[in-house]
Image 1 (cartoon, helix red, strand yellow):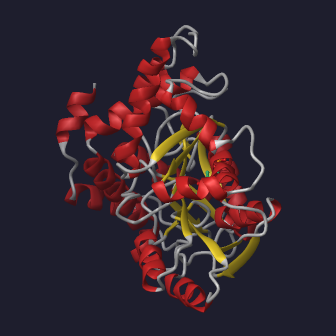
Image 2 (spheres, helix red, strand yellow):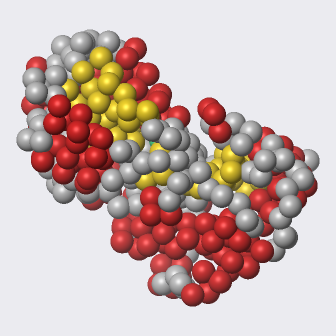
Length: 399
Ligand SMILES: *Cc1c(COP(=O)(O)O)cnc(C)c1O
């Protein structure tokens, strides 16, 4: 048995605000009754500013982020279409693998895990594509395996520079709702999210936003689709419901979470993630450890992947944290297994939680044999937090 609070610092599912948990304790209701729209409409409306869009249509699919990945592909592309994608972490690699499995021709650009999407190389490949074979460019906005944020606006610029007509697909599963995301301004055609990361809900909803251009592409797409049919779901949403039984509890939770995000203010939410991530990064640097992101300019404000010293197995750090300190860190994925662990710092989070994460990381690293000075990371993070105090208004208004 473990006493006290369990500490969850994985990059999704994230910690649920009590308000969101409470909002989900509701009786079952008829999803075909006219008043179901009273629940669905504010969720769809509330998501739009979070995606940075007026123009796009949003559809919710029972499933996780992976379902929305598939919905994006299956509704707008056709078997044999070529897509361009950079592989620079587990999630971009898996999305490429899915595209392949669905019958697309995948032109992959392999770059280091720790690097962002290579915008210049994307531009070069688009420029070389004289017969417009590339139908879509896929970007993983925030590579959760490495803690790297990519320049989506830069990829849009590359498309525009080449006068290339390819659709722009963006995986925003670990970015949307936490760091700036500007679907309209960046010309994103398909944006993918899930309910369990920045949106502070349990897993269970894949969220897909489709631009007018994506909706036009849907008319020409010949990919087989049934459960994930976007047109059918948008029609059902227009009628205030789903094509099949929706996870109503989750919609109640998401409505409460969106309400919370908008009460705090999206600009404040983004600033908070930046402030907290800066503290985590300062703490890790003060411990003499390196992060997987190759340069601070693209280090993610939602998750940090931390390399353990040569002599320290990251799996042991994670196991010690879990068993001794009731603390969960994210594992190193793929080639980073055993060499890195991850701290998720997104969603419903504050300074105290970040200091706990760092303190537990210090204890666990030390116990796993790493030479770290206990307290060094904490002091560095505290210095950041002392210099950049949060705005108190929300902290008081929220409770
Ligand atoms: C978590 C995550 C996914 C997968 O989402 P699931 O909800 O686990 O299906 C995809 N992409 C990124 C960037 C993620 O962080």
